[in-house]
Length: 212
Image (cartoon, rainbow, N blue to C red; front, side, top):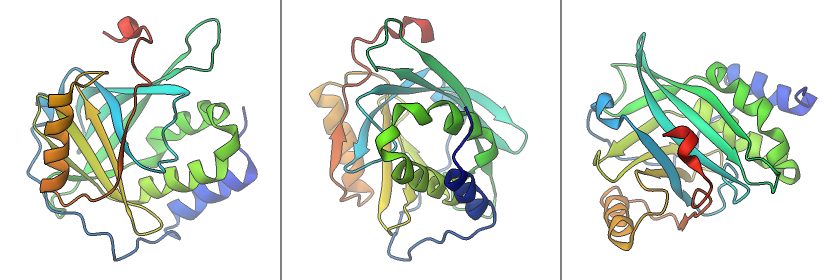
């Protein structure tokens, strides 16, 4: 499937640095991340309200791959919930480059590593293509700050094109308990995240044995 012309234009804009961050987005410093402690399967279960990158039509999960060159690599899994006779799984690399000039826990997403995702998942959100790709491409341009307790969650914070924080929280459980949600909420408060977070159940009962 070919990407629409306006999507390709957005890609070019981001690569050329034509999308800028709003100075109102203030993300706190984090700690250095022990990446190898993030091994295993994580599920995207909490998103900021109005997030165009998530949907109840599919489940998103990640697995830590390892240190690659001067960065860290994950594998992101997107499992379709479109009501297809067979669950469709798309897996693609997600690479973040480390830069010692950045604050601890902060890395830079590399867009080239995610072009396959952009191409293969377009059909999942046909009614919000422009919003999805604007936000997705903005996430390529924004440094990503990781924070985690290694046992329950890890979260990624970035600045969106509208100056607001984009927050995505991955948990060890696809259906986090009240106590686990409480741990996440405490972490959000400690990082001064005041965005309204939405708990997703899109990964529950979807048959993710294929990933384990």
